[in-house]
Length: 431
Image (cartoon, one colour):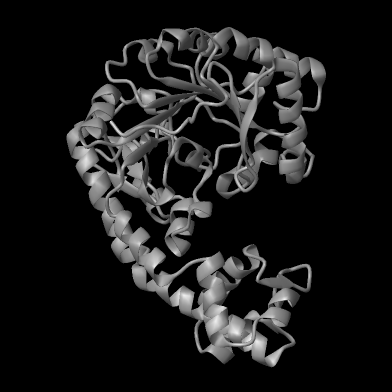
């Protein structure tokens, strides 16, 4: 049944339609590759400021210059319960069963589509308008007091609800305004702003100092047209793509750094990499085989053994390495000393440069986690909040003696130095 989407070794348009309704761009003649701008790319375009980068900023990656992509988006040998893609409808199986497109053609198309998205779907005008709308909202609240909902502000400022909402979210995150009800629909100006600011010029100065400016926005939007990092991590298992080495090499010839995120089930493909990425992420999804099978629902035999074999290769690799635990509360992570000790043993044996705990993202089809686990628990039972993960991270630091060198609250990300000097800057250098 899975192969109903493939005819003559090509992925059909029927399959592609599943994804083109989202912000995916399907790349290449044989339609096995894709790019997709991430949340943080747009956040960076919105302000241009460093604090709008994602967790990868610890490695020097700028979100607006990051090309998130995959050369094998339909193909994966796992059906992880936390996966955000539509594996119930769209997955084509655990083997790469179409004719592979040429890496040079793919990279050309990826960059072309990235630039088109920046110019036409995330246009500069949108973010300059957002800047002006934020100024208008704050000034109106300053002069007229009281509290306002989205509809009121839309009528007052004479712009759409969507534009008002976009501006309000940024102002709220910066704590310039505060919600006064539980559903975040009514806002009032922060009291300190009321007391300290009196004019439109002072509002503008505050936004320039703390949030963004037109110059920042214009510079960032211009820089985004020339990506310098490829995150080969979007969907599917990238090491299934037969020409993955050539793809990495093609990015390198364009002076782009590269990350590959693998589910660690293809040790033979790791061994055969001729051109290694700047950093290889290897997934450690569980501390034992039983939890692995429940979490990843593998479509291959001996998947757990293959993961351990991949981890055994780490010290032989000449690129930087990171072992990632994608955390699912009450499934593969718990506040349990013995469980954490089991993880620590695996990590110590693998000896990567870094170890990372990252909470899974409860969005898109990951919302089906309850159904995928055949559970009667509510969805939030499995969602690991930042405070919960912080407790687990501190226990890892204690039991494993891995220094915790970076945290990112928005991404719920915790980075440890393992085979890495904790005082050494982990930022990548451009090739």
